[in-house]
Image (cartoon, rainbow, N blue to C red):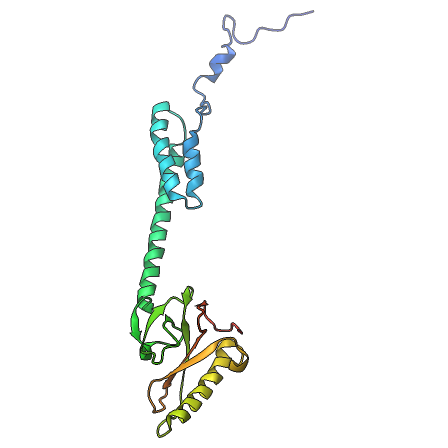
Length: 221
């Protein structure tokens, strides 16, 4: 049996297997900081305060222990900041919308606009002032229409009959149920006797001794 020829030139030996790995990058084996992971997880659904606290704890821990997770901690802070900005903008727009709608402001009943809700004593002998309210919260009444009615020259009783009929027609269209069948009450305020194009009788819906929540449009109550 013949011997195999020697590998390589005579007198030269192969390097050890370990030396072949010299200079080859080794995957980072440092552990991931759990506070950084938690901060990132809490930032995604918008729990900004918790995420910011966890990220603030994680960063010095990462620096001291030389662990991984710095990117997650900074990402958590950035996402939390975005949530804070978004919430701030939403709140500012909501307040601006309330201000534009006049919510909380007391106005003469003649200045109430159709589709505005308000708080007032609907059983008062004379309704002069109301406070504009958010329709989504509890309120006394809602202005649902301004109807056109020719009232000039009529007696007080005749004016009441004409105004009631006109508001009752609009009531059915608004609520989805006739006034006679509805559990709601109807109110009206004569703004002027002369019939004008945009309406001279303000029609309102409410319920004595009970507040409404939400608009009554299409409620069929």
